[in-house]
Length: 449
Ligand SMILES: NC(=O)C1=CN([C@@H]2O[C@H](COP(=O)(O)OP(=O)(O)OC[C@H]3O[C@@H](n4cnc5c(N)ncnc54)[C@H](O)[C@@H]3O)[C@@H](O)[C@H]2O)C=CC1
Ligand SMILES: O=C(O)CCC(=O)C(=O)O
Image (cartoon, rainbow, N blue to C red; front, side, top):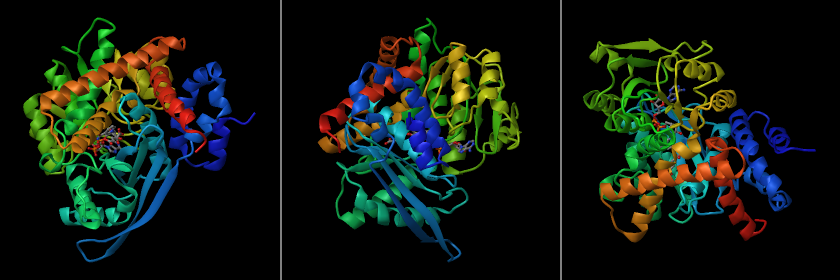
């Protein structure tokens, strides 16, 4: 019998990240298909793994030396069964179709979990903003949008940020869209506050991830107070994960970037976090500089040839991988378990390999997959779209309260679905099944399209 994996690896044999994401979901939804043969008959999964549309385009721009540079831009519009396409843009040299298809696929289930009407998409370019001047970034963003604009719209496709795309890039892209279309609409989220952005959107992914961890801990009658936490990354998600952990009494001892990590045994307090935000968001420097400013911290360079990451080999109670995909492999997962970790909460998308996930599940670690744990970002993007549509602005308490309730709801839905399908406490199955059923039902209602 031909399986889904045969189909996708036959069609696109090199898309290893996409295969990984599909393998995880298919493992869970098999339980649903066995109970609901009508989904098999309608070939729902076969349709879900094929993007509705992929847009690929040339992005030419001129650098500060007057040389012409050429990058490749993409938008993967995966599924619009429950709403307009929604999902971030990533600017990173590693961007290719495998990465964007895995991210867009994850986004479909994540967006469904938020309860808001958003389909799934992801896009970006193999452009590296690192080391580029503001003017170069602006010219790149303008060129990128000069093609993508024709595919976007508040009711069609609404991108946002991801790795390498923050407030600066969203501003440049919005400006170009507005000029080309001669309209001011909410066709991007993560906008600045004075031109249509939502309060709490910058904080949302990190805060949401910590709220999810808090909910998981509650099931074991524990809190984050005094918990030692390992956080990876030092960008948007890592910064606000750290902030919320500190607010809830936890102790964050690590942060990283692509070249190395810092270990600060005394803990990163709110003053040190202000420095991290300046270092990463304004100075655009390296995390190594943290250890130069705070001598109580040590800096360790990553060895690209190593079979594990030393960041995950410290004694800790909780781990919040918040940098990038596949940053926790099987050996890292074993190290975390051996060092006493009880909670692993994925702020990043797919930061744990399939083998790593198995270790966490085997050891009954409270393991939150990214599509549930980091859904707070896109949820507040959905709230930004709602505010734009109503032409109103909610205050920060209101948005944060809605975010907290959405994260509690997702947590509950994961537990209910995992219980209903005979794997209580398995948040991987819970998230995949709860997200899948919502999208599958909509696809059934809408016929074969
Ligand atoms: N920004 C958002 O709202 C959301 C982001 N995510 C995910 O969270 C993760 C982080 O995204 P952001 O914080 O937004 O991006 P960012 O660009 O603000 O920060 C990315 C961080 O990851 C580090 N990093 C990138 N590549 C790396 C590598 N190969 N090895 C080690 N570190 C690396 C960077 O140095 C940086 O500290 C990504 O997986 C993203 O897809 C998920 C949901 C929403
Ligand atoms: O806010 C959004 O639309 C997208 C966020 C995102 O890219 C993600 O959840 O991975």
